[in-house]
Length: 237
Image (cartoon, rainbow, N blue to C red; front, side, top):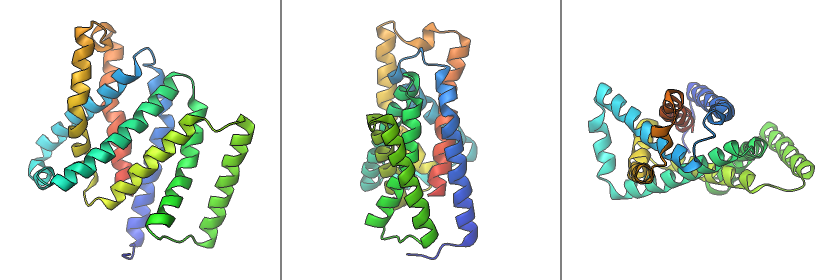
């Protein structure tokens, strides 16, 4: 394993910290559009994420940087897997927030670092220092306490850390930068998102066309809410 440069470590920690701060405040945002169906929200997250990324690629002229990745069948296959994992995570999170299960999502993201540690130890052969082991032990005790207090471990609190833990693990192993990786994930998902939105429109049940300007603006902002923390997280890992 290569030696990590102290500056890189600091930057990685700051990026990861920023990502989790944004994710921690995301429930406040999604509460504002809880009247929209979960599946439509996910479709808008994917669609507007891709629109913004394409705009950034056009401005910065990064299309040539993406070409080697989209012509690599193995890379496309791996990015499809990570896209499915992150979209599953989004679906579970959005459903939980819009159905008043925010505490369950909090429990899930509290468990998430423990899943990351377990994956790192099992598959990356990383070892914990004494201080890190104590931190993990305290977090584990905290999780067990929450489970006892709640009386059970909600499925949301299981699905979130498992899907995102595997996502983070695979993104760490895949040799692609944060921007191009997110672009490829969006490109693999956007046909499904567009297809679903078109289907809703044919059924006259598309909230984007029926709600006011405020809801329209919030749905378009789903792209920013999706891009920024994911970019920070993947840069961090």
